[in-house]
Every structure is written in structure tokens, then in C-alpha cells.
Length: 86
Image 1: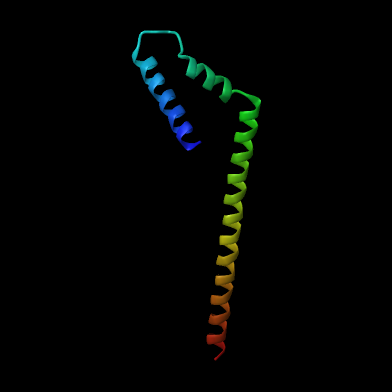
Image 2: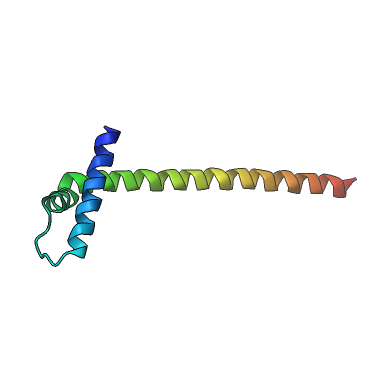
């Protein structure tokens, strides 16, 4: 499967470069197919869900980091207070 993806990307890249360096106004078939895929509802939904998942992961990581930082700050404040009381 990975080999097929690599081959498809290679084909798209090759045909795009050929198209861009040619005088032709006719898009290669692979670029037409990719355009149909990229504008399909299924692709849009998949891309949206993937983006949403990444964003949620980033927010959860940030929230966890802030929680750890706040716990660390509270520990420092408590230690400082204890030193000041002595």
C-alpha cells in the first residue's frame, strides 16, 4: 500500500512538472482525477475530521502542560511560604 501511494505521488509530481513546463493547456488525466478526489465530499469530511483530531490533541496537550505548570508553581509557592515561616 505504501508503495502504491509513493508511485501515485511520483506520477502526480512528474505529470505536474511536465504540465507546468509545457505549452499545453490540457491537464493530464492524473491531475484531473486528483482534482475530483480533492473536491469530493468524502475527502473534505475526512480532512476535516483529521484536522479536528489534531487540533483537539494539541489543545489537550496544552491543557495538560498548563496543569503541570500550575502544579509546579503551587509547589514552589508552598516551599517559599514554608521557608518564610521558619
